[in-house]
Image (cartoon, rainbow, N blue to C red; front, top):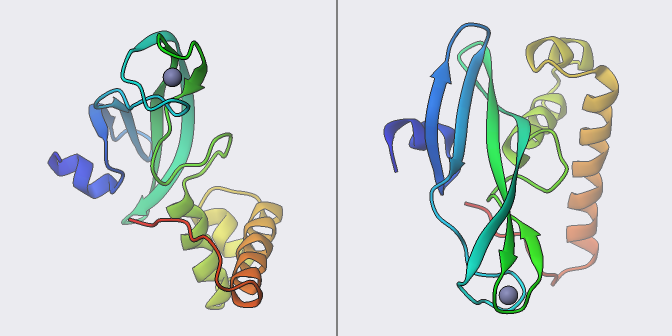
Length: 153
Ligand SMILES: [Zn+2]
């Protein structure tokens, strides 16, 4: 992994550009094509490429924003489609798992919603939503054990 790749902490990303003008903006794309999510075949063709903008982490006092290229693959074997899966970033979310966890832990540790909305560039309602999400998940982990666990890196 490249130096910037290590800072980002998300494996499988190739950094294309870093811009420090307003916060830290990183443009990246997947380093390689995965196997098919449906049949594990390797005959994937890129059908289209979408873009996603994700809040990822804070470095010093700046928020790092990722601009990801997201290929949509077409499997030549099973003929199905899927979008490139990124480790630590859920489909459709606007922030990485690491970012959401960071906000949860800060709020859990007593940092106010108002302060977090300023430092992390999100609304107070979002802080509240992420907080409840993580509290709910912890609770279900405790009541439904053993359960399949999300693999964390
Ligand atoms: Zn397939």
